[in-house]
Amino acid sequence: MSEKAFSKEQQQYIAGFAFGADVARAVNRLPMVSNCVSGPSGNSVTVGGGAATVDGKVLPVGPERIALQAQADCIAAGKKLCKEEKAKQAKNPLDMWDEIQARSDANEFPKGDDVFLTKFHGLFFVAPAQNSFMCRMRLPGGVLHSWQLRGLADLSEKSAGGFVDVTTRANLQLREIPADHAMNILYGLRELDIISLGSGGDNIRNCTASALSGIDPSELIETIPYAKRMHHYIVNHREMYGLPRKFNIAFDGGGSISALDDTNDIGFHAVQVTDENASETLPAGVYFQLTLGGITGHKDFARDTGVLLRPEECVEVAGAIVRVFVKNGDRTDRKKARLKYVLDDWGFEKFIQAVETEMGRDLRKVDSSLVVIPDNENRQAHVGVHPQKQNGRQYVGVVLPVGRITSDQARGLSDIAETYGNGEIRCTVWQNILIPHIRDEDVEEVKAKLDLIGLSCDASSFRAGLVACTGSAGCKFAGADTKKHAMIIAETLESQFELDQPINIHVTGCHHSCAQHYIGDIGLQACQVEQGDDMVDGYHVNVGGGWGTRKAIARLLFESVAFSDVPALITAIVGGYLQGRQNNESFVDFARRTSDEDLKALAVSCV
Image (cartoon, rainbow, N blue to C red):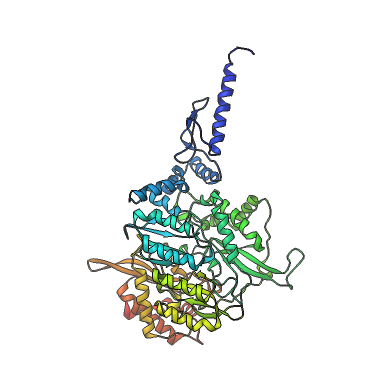
C-alpha cells in the first residue's frame, strides 16, 4: 500500500462524502456521534431538538419535506412567513410529546408559540376565557361505543369539568382541564382507543359522514366506512399534518341527515348514474361527486369540480388534493390560507390538473346532467324516533341542550345504548347523538330511561335546529355567552309558537363561525355592543341561510343588537313569518322573497 498522503482533491472528496453521509442520516432521522458535523466548506448538519438543519436552515426531509419546501420556496420568493409558519418551521409540533409531559408535570400551561403548537395534539389553552385546556378528539364518522363514552365520562370527572360537549363536526370535546391533568387526558384518550392528534392547529379536522350510514332507508351508500378510512390515512401520513391552515372533509351518502358536505374543503356527495345515462366508460351505479372549497365562514360553499369518483377512489384523491394544497397554500396570510383562496387564484381547472399530476393519472370528468343527485333530507331526522332500514329496529335522536351533557348523563346514555341497542353511539353535526338498533318494543322504555337522566328525544322545531358554539364562557375569541343565549332564545320562542317545520337558529361567538351562522335560517354572530358607558354582549342578526338544495349565505339584517333585545326581535321576525307565509312555505323561502326593509319592519319596535 502506498503511504503517499491524500491529495487536496481527494481530501475534499472524502470530506464531502462523509458530510453527505451525515446529511443522509439526518434525512432518515438516524443519530450521529457528534450530532453536529462540519462539511468540506464549513457546512454543518444538525439533527435533534427539532427539524434537521444545514447551516441553521431547515432541511426538507422525510414526509414533512413538502411543507418545509413550501416554506423555503415562500422565503426564496421574497415573502415573509406568518408567525405560525415560523413556529412550525422551528419546531415540528408532532414531536412535542415530551415537552407537553414536562409542562403537565410542572403544572404549567404553554406560552408563546407553544400555545399554537400544542393544538396539534388536541390541547387548546383557552385563556383568558378560562385558565384551562380544552381537548378535542378525532371520532371518524362521529361513531363511538358505549364503553368509550363511559370512559370519557370518568375521564372528564377526574381531569376535566365533569361534562362532555358535542361539536358541529360530530365530535367530542372535554373542557376545564387543569394544566397538571393535560397528560392524564392524552393518556386516557389513547387507553379508550381515541386519539386527539391533529384535531387542532393547521390540520385536517374530524372526518364526518352521514350520521345514519348503514341504517338509513333512503341513503345511496354507507359513508362511515370511508370516513374511517380517510381518518386512518391521515394519521398514518405525516405530510397530512403540514397544511398552511385547517381543513375539513365530509362524506354524504344522500340520506335523511345531511353531513353538510358543501361547507367542507372537500365534499364527497353520493350521486347515481342510472341505466339511462350509463355508458361503457361510465357504468351505472353509485359514485361520489367531488366538490371543493367550502368555507361558509368566508361566505362560500364547496363547488362541483366535474369529477366523479368511485367510492374506493375517494381517499387516494383526497390525499392528492391535500398534498397540492400543502405545496401551494398561502403561508404569509392566515386569513387567505384556506383552500378556497388557492381555488380562487388558480381556478378549478388548473387545480384539478395539479391533482392529476400529483396522482400520475387523469380523473373521471362527467357532466352533472348525467347524474342524479338525491334530495332525501329530513331536517328533523336527527331528533325523535325513526325506523331503520333493518326490520324491527329504530334509532333515537337524543336532544342535547346546545350540545352539552354531564358525565352522569353520558354514563346513562352508555347504559341505554348497551342495554337496548348494540352499544353504538353516533354524534351528529347538529350537536346531538343517535342511539341506533333499538327494538320496536323497547322504544317507550328507552324514552323513560332518557327522562330519568334529564334528557329527551322530543324537541320543538326551534330546539331541533338550535346550534351554538362554546361562546365566551370557554373561548377567548367569542363576543358573547352563546350557549346560554341560545337556550334563552329557544325558551322564548317555544313559549310563543308551535311550528310545523324547523327553523334553524345558529349562534356563533365570532367571525370564525364555528356554529356556521351563515347557513342558519337565522344566524347570530356575537359582538360587543356599546350601551351607555358599558360594553355588553350583542349580536349581528342574519337571515336566509341554508345548505344542500337550499344553500345560500345568510344576509345581514341587523348589526350590533344588544342581547337584551335579541329574543324579542327574533320573536317578532318569526311571528311575521307565521302570519305572512304562503302555503306553509319554509322560513328560508319566506326570508328570501321578503325584502330587508319588510323584514326589518317586522321587528322595528324591538331595536
